[in-house]
Length: 398
Image (cartoon, rainbow, N blue to C red; front, side, top):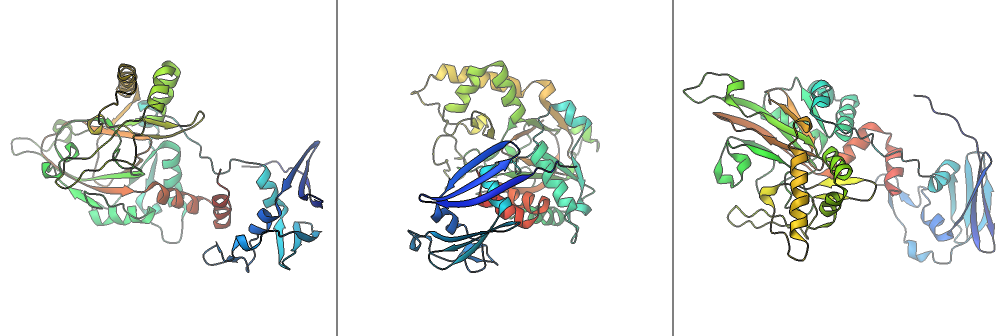
């Protein structure tokens, strides 16, 4: 991809009130007054920042009243000498980036329906992801999850050990009251319908945590038929279901804007209360759709784990909105049905993609785990972008 080269004329000047950054972008002029303390605080030299940890190693609040004594422009930046005798260098590109939000860390989100994923399934090979000296495979995996909300890791060893190794390459496996890495067969002792043979409607997991799990992974190791059945996966049931929650929210907002606003603004209680000695609920009531006016952040939906809608809101309005949401989730065109297979690991974004399954016969052995959202985003950044660019972007998140 080729990018147009733009010409900037950038200067840093001082006056009686302090510092002024001026940028000439073609015919457009932009000027921004800079706090002297802010600029001194953001010196990244080896004296100010530990180059191993990238953490500040000075007390910002001992610099009150600091001022620039000399400003020396250079071709690629500017040297500043401060009243505390410290010398700093700032590149023009960094200073410009403070004024212009290029949106460089925004992902290319692709909303999808069932037929889209059926015809264009995001896939990477296990071997490419796990390559020791080549991060291309990991970059491909994490980018596909960012863009589509899911990815299949194909040609994987059909073992729990290899599955765990893959997940730990992305980030630490999250522990919950069910444990960490899971390797299970149906077991109602877990006190959750996920551990049965029953059908499950489209839902997100761990709605009852303040921060729900970021990624979830499933690897079906085997599906053994009951004694009276032939070994025919199609007749045993257990097809898996995925629905793009962000697309469903988009449809709800477009078709029923009032219902969308209801699910975006009304906080709902969620809980996990089936296990002895466990009574988990988030720090507050959270809405089904967590979103700003311009961006959907997270879907939190599992009707089975939902508590009581508070009487302080118009409950009939909420039920009507939730009914429309449920209808959109169940539309055939929005559903992607497929069969889990040994050697084919599914990893998906639990903040975006809802999952479910049809009822099944026999005994299925499935392994997998959860990964926290922040750990996944860290791996996405470090495998797709240069390290210094990642650190710079992290320090100026907006």
